[in-house]
Length: 290
Ligand code: GLN
Image (cartoon, rainbow, N blue to C red; front, top):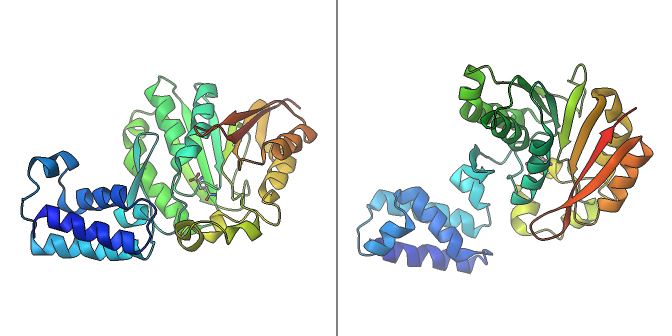
């Protein structure tokens, strides 16, 4: 079959499954299975694709038609310009979360100890450390924690893949431990980061198919009003922050005021809210000076 015919078939399958962005997803799948770029395609739409690759592509398209997220089918996804391995055990890294990483990177100093609660794929911690090391910060150490052992396997694989060079040069040291929030942590940290589950339980039902069915439920559910993790973090995190240490949290678009209030009530100062690319509240940061 020619790549042109295959493209038409894949796109038709995705459209019949009401996949939100059928054209974009078709390109991702074709590039993944054929190893050819979009430009290669336009240079020669008549090029033949082997029966094996055709079959593999159509199999993936069928799965996408069932609304399995594209990222799980590809097995990896880009975040902060780095390629992270993903599977059904972790929340797919979202572009919105890059705001949290940027905020962390603007504050990190050489020698800092960083803790990432609910680390999932490890995308936050790994990007912060890698980016900081690439920008001359040294002697950094990071701990990522999560309840899910399977998520931690993904985080460890990502760290091995993405931080090997920085670790070899002695710039960065990373560990991942299973545990609820800070249960597996010892000592105090300069920077504590988290993108905890923050969807109100009743709202999970109205999320798009891909998220509702396939993203790990445990990574989404923030309790009745979505704020459960923020309450626990605000009241307990102080013992794990150094004096003057910073807490940076991702939040839902309508949680800025509530989460800022929780931090202020727990003794945080200089509490600020940052917006994402869509102009919505996305991150809250505060300094602990007790
Ligand atoms: N920290 C991970 C991320 O931002 C996982 C977050 C989660 O599971 N709630 O992708």
